Amino acid sequence: MASRSYFNDTIAAIATGLGQAGIGIVRISGPDALLLADKIFVSRERGRPSDFRAYTTHYGWIVESLQLTSQNSKSRPPQEFIDEVILTIMRAPRSYTKEDVVEINCHGGIVALRRTLDLVLENGARLANPGEFTKRAFLNGRIDLAQAEAVLDIIKAKSDSALKVATAQLKGLLSRQIDKIREIVLGALSVLEANIDFPEEEIGEANFEEVPRSLKQANAALKDLLGQAKRGKIFREGVKAVICGRPNVGKSSLLNALIQEERSIVTSVPGTTRDTIEEIIDIKGIPIRIVDTAGIIEPRDLVEKKAVRRSKKYIDQADLAILLFDGNSRLSPQDEILIKKLKNKTTIAVINKIDLRQKVEKERIVKSFGRAVEISAKKHKNIFMLEDEIASLVTNGQLGISEPVLLSNIRHITAVKEAQKLVEEAQDSLDNSLSVEFVAQGIKDALLHLDGIVGRCFCEDLLDKIFGEFCIGK
Image (cartoon, rainbow, N blue to C red):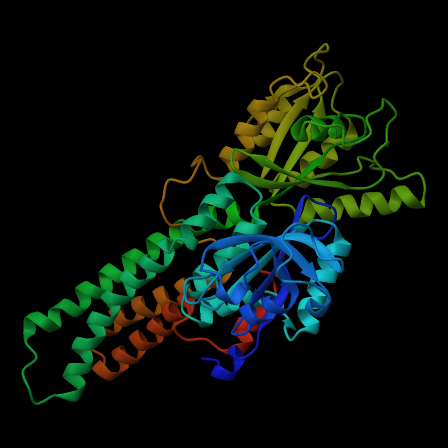
């Protein structure tokens, strides 16, 4: 745990995105937050922020120097002012950080926000580090480490499903599940340690028989969590998908149909797309990072050569390939090259241009990939069928979030895997009548991994890594 001196200073930052907006917020947290607000805020109500009640908002002005203003001025703003604002007071411990917190709602222009923040810093606050407000919330005990990580997941959520996974974690559902498993494992450990500490006393056969039952129960619960981890990771991080095919089969038209806007240039000229184009779309609650690649197989110049090289790289790295065929023409040698290349990759075969006379050898495509989705990207026909196929393939037919708790964070998944492995090894050790001390040590190591998820044990390097991914102001 960090030393108390860590909390002796007051931090501040702009808590909203920079740029023009209706409102921008400067957030202040720490022991001097209210006194600092006294120095820069003139209330229309004549009072000082340090005297305001918690959870109240107050209209007034941010000023450069209170010596130049009158606190009794109620009819008009002071002459030397930076912005007209709404100030909100949250007193410790009932605040986001469990410290005194002041939030200044300014107009959203960057100049007003920066001048307000500069004034706060000039009067004694320190610029917050990335994620420091949430880090203080964790260190002060308002949330655990898994909940703190969920804050970032909410900010980064790219779909409704990703948001549901993150909010469930923020509410503590994952932490409670980990705690339940921890209690089961801890119960088994307590019996083993009683046997170690008091070998001359009768622990009781019934109590000792409870140990393998508890380990079996914990192992099953950990396996259940891991069983849902792939879906949770998909909802959190999304899937890399690539649209590929020979030139002029409609790849850019398909991208535009999926994102429902004209992101890619569409012409009848082969090779129009000379570089990769990326978009993130939400398909059935799954964030899909979709890439439209150049379709040139035999490059004509240096630019096209680089485009082909990049396309091949994206195809190799993609989780899912959407291989597009022109239904209005027969399979070409270029099509055959792509069929061979993608035969062992997770691929959805798509026959485009069904609004035109069909000439493509559908049986050859189906034989290679099991089935083919038939669409017209230009006419937006059957796009929903392709979306269903993508979602079903990505989630193995399990659409939506059926479980209340989904592991999604790679750190959590790794920790649960290690804990499950150690619990299973402890079961095997008991079955093979290994020493009780050896079994107990394995269980202790499993508990360390579980405790690391919620932050019962941690190192500063871990916190720096986690909160370093946050933006300044959160």
